[in-house]
Image (tube, rainbow over all chains, first blue to last red; front, side, top):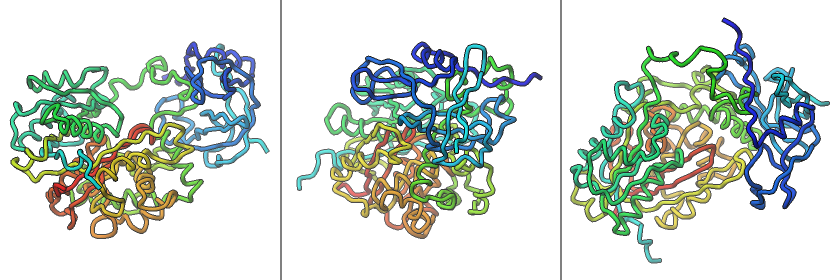
Length: 136
Length: 392
């Protein structure tokens, strides 16, 4: 049986600018045109001011681990060989949080508050994903 | 202070619980019909007495958008004056009972069945039928989170629990204490799926990880089955078969925001409606039945109802939630961790049993006032019920 590849996310229309930027290794998030609030992932409206007017802006790829969950069950066979592995919430310096992984860091070493910076994983010819690595 | 018009206006008069757990050979609608029949028998009512049906469809109801109509057809009941398919996740049971109580008190209808059922478990032979295959079969894994190997509500709650541990010093032992205490109650409950299986704190620590910080026994069961309660006016309740369980208070609280930030359930808001309505405060409850999708949820909910200061839930359960015969009686049937998982109907049903005095070996000695909570999503929705043996 062939190994199953890690899932490639579908590029939903509202997330297309994110994936386009990621492909050129630039991290972008949504910015409310009306009030300036940043948000991620894409949402239909700003939940600070309810404006529907939105743009995408680049942000610094540095932040800290906000929380961590260590997965011991693979819900998808591509992750079985990695068990146990850590899924993290990274809080970027701009305040936005995103689900991700800390590349090349054993699950047991990932801690809340750990400084991280973005790096890039080419998941498919179309999709490059931001992941994070330890930062000293 | 004049009494709130809803305080004691209605009562739960019928309780129907089908066999729970790895029960096969029926679907969700079938379990729902069984639960309603059992609840009618329990109350001494006939099907024709029902003029309201509310339903909370479990996962296996699928896309049945008008579930309450499907259930009406399956039950063969005519001329309903109230029906709705409701879904606030685990807060739905309390919300259904509140909706029924408000409608009955307002004279819109008289006798309402509130129903949950689900059949997510398949017989062992059928398992694997949709497993295996190629990556293309994993249609659930199309989102960005799945690309990072982030799946399911266990992991979502784990991120929140980890924050609570980080911020307040909650420990793995604290989580384990909830699992062990509830198992002790389940060992006294013949209807509990884990009735025959004791659990020590060592067993808990040795059980496999699901997603850290959750061991297997931090997570609720999955159950096939159905559960229904019937609610009517307080006046009519007094002429029926079982001791009425009066509804004294009800409330909801849905905080919004990121639960990993707030570390707080909607109990903080729901109680502000329910407790003044019932004219009670946190210290008055004889028995406490809290929604327990995870051990973690119990200690957060205890904090948010004010049994202890915010952040002290772990230390509180270690000292005061010790199972039968000691401290505060919490989740006295074993809860969803150790008895069965019917979303918010599990705590509702145990409160009805305790308030009536039908708890058998696990009956708490004093059972005049019960607190019931429901919680849906990731601390996203919350419902409160205050139930009493006394009419007022």
